[in-house]
Image 1: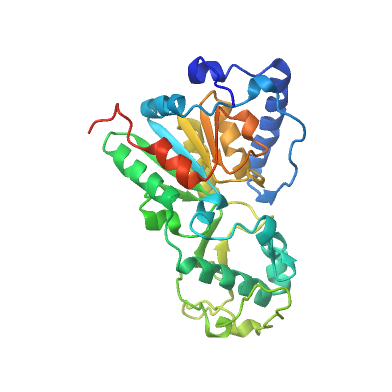
Image 2: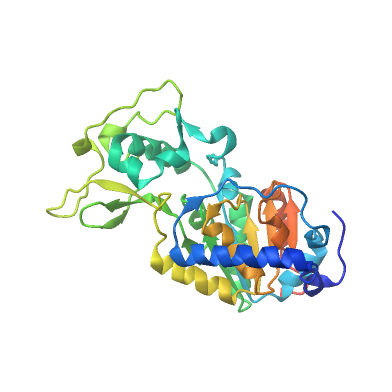
Length: 329
């Protein structure tokens, strides 16, 4: 990928009139999605070659210079970050659980129709992550946050991941836009509770195997996880944002604030097809703020960013976030 001279300001001026018009239309559409806050998945990928003049830079030294001056850094992370710890992304070869596409199970309608099946699916996911450890990506982000805090600079992690690996790594300023696998919410009283039991209830022990020929356990609803609040005993559900549901308004308000004040944004390990999170990076870019994408491949949003670093995030990101020579030792 060719180097584009002139630094971040010049690189942001590389868009032609046509690409600017295209980007403006896309951002207006995405802002409408953000205001609604619905979680949805778009498999549409822009075809054809991006405008040559809009191609992002892969110059790490240039990015590092920008990083050294940034005061408020927003890092948006997706499933690819957890994949570095061995957690399946539920995309591509891992898209199906048994014979169902994972996105079809992660809906309020699916939970209403068959809570046993959906709980088996989430029991499987909970058990998968319980023994996983933070990757080099998680650790680099947490170390960067702690280091920059001593310099009066801030790092916020806006994550789509529903595991607890960022927290385990030591990240403090963390916004989980899609909820948490390790929390439950009561369908009756609304109580949200941290729950890391394994299994979460006796009836789910030994269930959840993903094989295509595995039959549903068909657990009676009264044997599924139940609320322990006095006089409630309501059915619990995973405290995650299902597809078709709105994001938590309090979390979304905090995210909006962060993407409006940050002066550098990193988009790490995300396919950029799940909305509204897919447009957080482009929203930052629309303010003229540098955005750097770290991913195994390009995404539908790559052409809107200042930088793109291709490869394993566990290799590229620690280098990007390492202590800069200009920092105080």
